[in-house]
Length: 68
Image 1: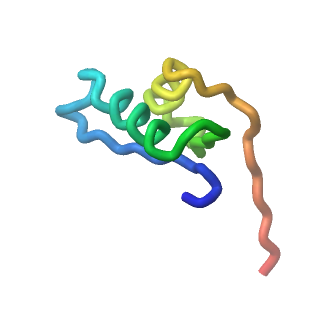
Image 2: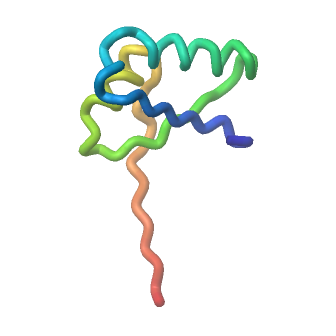
Image 3: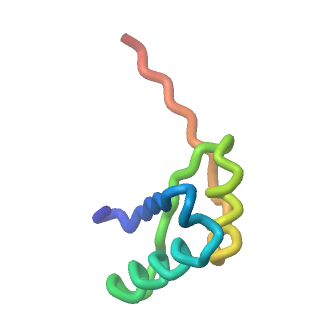
């Protein structure tokens, strides 16, 4: 996104083959240096591990309340 948020989805049969890391590398290469964010559900352990393994660090858990 324009806020440098990254989302990657790799079909299950292609996971674990380094494709996600290659995609991430290409995204960052194309967009240049700077800060990148990945919003991940705390329950999504595979995605958390993927981004940690690719140099991302946990910076926050976000909670929202909307009064209707």
